[in-house]
Length: 187
Length: 283
Image (cartoon, rainbow over all chains, first blue to last red; front, side):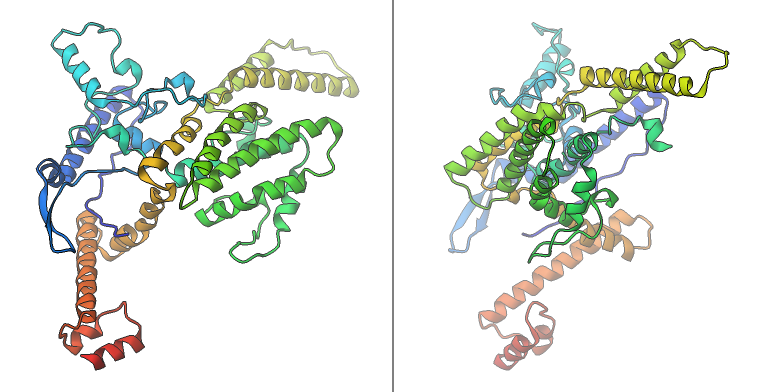
């Protein structure tokens, strides 16, 4: 499998204690991340939309479309890239309180609707302005994959055996032995 | 999961047995024998995790032999839950699937969800910890303070009673607040959805990216002069990658019978020395 290194993502500075300064820094981080991803995905946009002629091994020239198929990352990276809260599934519309159930009835998340919703809200035509995407844990405009041709951001998430399956065996949760409090443990 | 297993074993006095069985695992081709007891390992590497996944069920089953009758039902449930999780993990490694294996993969999370309640007191979050500490502080604050002299035996009895009360309150808070409502629990339900449209699960793994850090970033960082290092890392890796592609092209051309000079053939690293000699002779 060929592995290319197109870019290194910038590392944001550590957040300070002041929440107001943190909020400002968070916004800068999000904007920077989005700009960097726009730069990275720019070469994919036109070939994804129009296609490019590529000569194949059989000698024929085929029209090929470059479409982003998967994005492999751990959950916290997905949270940053999809612009969601950490207790939200980037793929389906499962409510945060139902993560514990094994039900598969939840529809796939459509990020285009959130953008549309935010636009309607902005021009003041929303029918249900109280049910905002923010109230559902979505930070509108922060999904770096939104806007790519022929790509649905919710389909990019793939089960990862390292982060989702294997790490389950070692540590499924930030747990602590209930017999000891944090203070007792450190001492 | 191992935190939970360790927790439930500690509660029932089975940790020593688990460690003994863990350290006594015999060698087997392809299996890395653990050198330390389970509790002595501070950081788990990928290979060690894979080893653990293979043998954890067996080790646990051996460690839970000769149980008291009161523990029997509890540990049977533990074993069933762990088995479902380990089986799910093993099946997620399959390179090809049939309708039957997919059905199995759909059933295992159901088993895990049915039996996970036995671990309820172990997924303790920071928020619950803070709440437990707060309750303990309140309890200690509310206790009447006496300045009278108390006999040592009576004092000990009083302390024991206080400690017991604290434990009861702590467990009550933990049982009330603890939950399995976290995202990894939900992700298990998405595994099977991707197998039919996209193929086996090991294809999509962050293993490759994590491995790539070593050659792509760390090596590049070491070679850079640490000034504007990111640019240098990307540039140097792109050059190396370009040269590798060029060499592969030349090698392929050489195989097809193209006329390559001996200097070029010398740099075609993928060929073994004997093959390279034969190749030069052929040219």
